[in-house]
Length: 166
Image 1: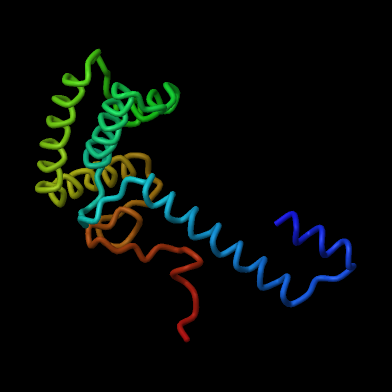
Image 2 (image 1 turned 60 degrees about the horizontal axis):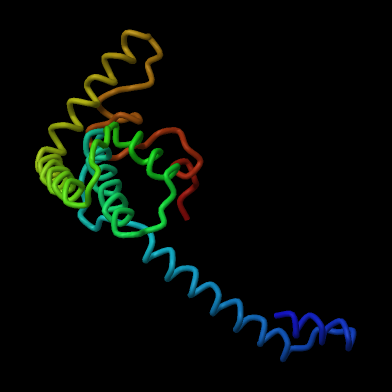
């Protein structure tokens, strides 16, 4: 990259060949970063309705995986561990890898349960939101059509949903 910039400055122009070399380097760098991001980001391919409990259970598994890695010599920062632990609303009393593995198994069983009960859990959470919203009188939450819709599709007042159809 430096060579390209040096050559451009030296000759006073940016050639098509230099642009091709630059594009090739940029493409390789992008592919490397995307591959690294894919390998570093935990993803779930199983579609499920979102719920607070489901989110916490998946965050718990993420935490226990990181904790086990840390016990094995991984370099995850304690600050990162603390943030994830707080997101999962958990407390960690483990001091050995085996204890963390046991906790991970418990978290995995919990996640499976939440996947199984996801629709019922989500519907209950939405009903609570509607009741809370009704008590506040803001009228933003409804069970049919708003941000808290149980039909799993929100047609709210957003720029994306209000774009003209072509």
